[in-house]
Structure formats: C-alpha cells, structure tokens
Image (cartoon, rainbow, N blue to C red):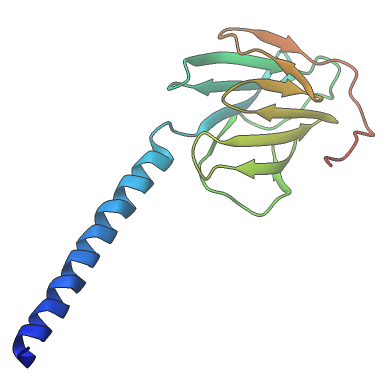
Length: 153
C-alpha cells in the first residue's frame, strides 16, 4: 500500500467521523430541548403567594397553586424557565428548588415552598408526595403553612 493512499484513507475516516459526530450531537441536542422547559410565574393574588405553571408542549396552561395561609410577600412577579441545571438547593421566590433534572426537557423540578414539596413531572404533579393529575386552568390551594417539612430521601 502506498503511503499517500494510507494518508488519504486516514483523512477520509477522520472527516467521516467528524461529520458523524456533528450530526449525532445536533440530533441529540434537538431531542433534549424539543419539548421546552417548565415555566413558573411566582406572583401575588390579593396578597396571597401564587405559582402559575405553564408548559405549552404538554398542553398545560394556567395551573395555579395558591397559598392562602402564607404570609404576604412583596416580591414583584417573577417568571422562571427551568432550562439549565444548577447546583441545588438554590433560592426561588417563596422558597427553594431542591431538585432539578432537566437533561431531557421538561424533566423534573421539585420546589419546597412554604414547607410544601411541589414536584413537576411530565406525567403528573405531586404535592407533598401525593399525585395530582394535570388539569389546565386548575386552581390548587395549599393551606396549613408547614414549617417542618420532611426532607427528600
């Protein structure tokens, strides 16, 4: 085998591998973010803290979680899209994010708000480890502000 022909084959294999890598990488990255993130708006409604959840691809709109017994907050409305993973726990309005897995969006997000554990998953919403099916337009009121919530195991 001639030296020039071997070099050409090596270069050809390198280029084919590089093109294959770029194509596969972009396909995986597209699959990872195609469904989009959870979008949560932290706001007040008549002095009550409220979380409003929306996820367009899952057909979830205006799901409100209200805390009627919680102390009034002065925070202006703030919207968070859970797109990038961060070290947990980290603060969010009214509480903290204690778990986030957004590798393939929307993923799973767990918030601890006024002692309640609220978990967003594509399949179901869980509140204090009790499953609630998703219903667009639903208003969920969580009373009894808990101060000694159990940690996640």
